[in-house]
Amino acid sequence: MEETNMTAKSEVWQGTAALMILKTLEALGPLHGYGIARRIEQTSEDLLSINQGTLYPVLLKLEQEGSIASQWGVSDNNRKAKFYRLTRLGKKQLAAEARQWRQTTAIIARFFAMKGEARGAARSDHLLTL
Figure (tube, rainbow, N blue to C red):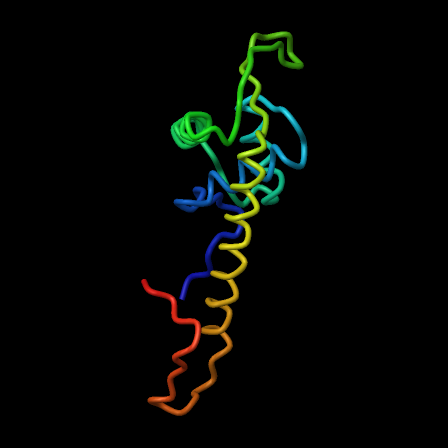
């Protein structure tokens, strides 16, 4: 069996780009699109790749929802750039999405922890509908 190449970058998982963008803006303050993309890649230790075709539609959607706001400014290399910042609504959205991801990862962790439990044993509390 061939070993996978750990240096190959993966695309950002569907549904996670917004969360990563919001968290990046919360941590670093206003950034332009290129800066957001590079920071996401750096934070993932270059295991993720985010391209313009993924990034800008998510930024537009977040802006339309009111989670981020933008204004034109000048980048470090003296170019005109649109800078994005987190809004109050965006902070609330980030908290809700982070809570949801923590719950989701805890559920998935339970499946990886399963060892061969008795068949038919089911828990009815805290059901999650898929």
